Image 1 (cartoon, rainbow, N blue to C red):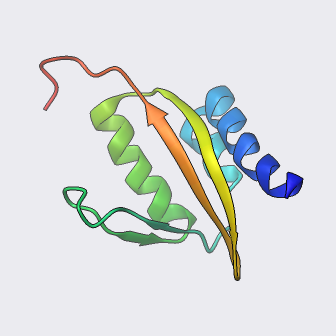
Image 2: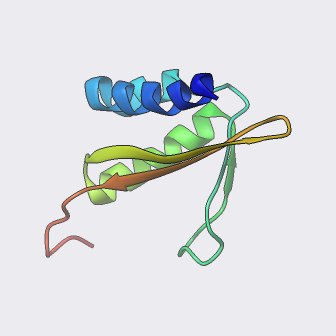
Length: 94
């Protein structure tokens, strides 16, 4: 389980030090990112490049911020990483 915890902390550290590109370097190439269906425009993104592009959209709208890992849950065939991203957004942001 310690190895799984390192998975999340390595990503947070890479994001803090090198931004989204650093974060993406920690991802498996076959990553699947699933958003809550209640999230406006929510979807499922498959592969490192697709997820990175989605995160770039968020960063463009919300700005860079800080990230933390809430949980790393082992599942058959991989893990579920639950993370939190916080950013300050200007009042006049779209």
